[in-house]
Amino acid sequence: MTPRPTASEAPDGAPDGARDAPRGEAWAGAAGPVPDPTVAPDVPGGRVGDAWPELRERPALRRSVGVFLALCGVFTVLVVGWGVVALTRDHTPPETDLSRAERLAGLLSSQHPGQGRYYVPDEIVLTRTADGSEVGYLHYRLDGGEDVNVDDFLRTYNLPEPGTPAQLPGDLVQALPGEEPAVAPVLPGSAGSDGHRQIYVAPAENGPAGAGDVYVRATG
Image 1: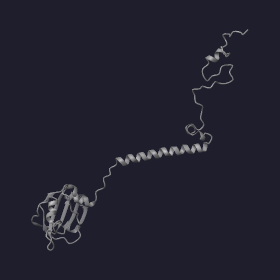
Image 2 (image 1 turned 60 degrees about the vertical axis):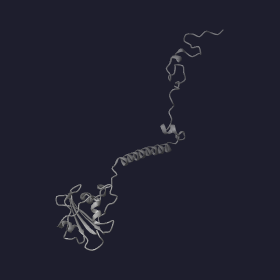
Image 3 (image 1 turned 45 degrees about the horizontal axis):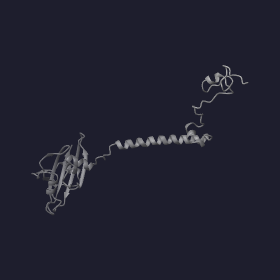
Image 4 (image 1 turned 135 degrees about the vertical axis):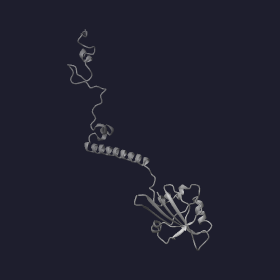
């Protein structure tokens, strides 16, 4: 006859305390702790060993892989930072002496949109006075003919007709190389974009019609 289970026994033969004991703890009569199925066992090598099981038993190689991954992360951050700087920085090229002198004189091509043409000075000098003001000296040599002549130059830059002859400024004569005339017809004074300008037009004594030289002194 099979004996009935007592109050101190469970139906499966284990004491009641085993059923009531928390997970992971052994009851008094157990041989060892009961593993908790919800907790993952420790993996040698941490996350690297978990991602690459073959590295679990190779600590030196595992460390090398970890260092490599860290370097890749640093490199990625540097590349992203460089890209952000490159996209946000100002890519406008610095202004040259030529463009600055033309801007002072109001003769830069961008200051006269829609003309479809412009003249490039043969000689240009950009300097500063004793008080720090910029001074630009420009010389345009016009060969004459149908396309390149004094009248077209004045029309391109919306300039008035030359007036009475006047003496060229001494600093202009000294700054520009070559042989400038002492006197040439001067255009009525007009303000450039960044300062005052003086424009002298010296018609060529010999050569095609419309040939001549234009001398400009501009301050800003």
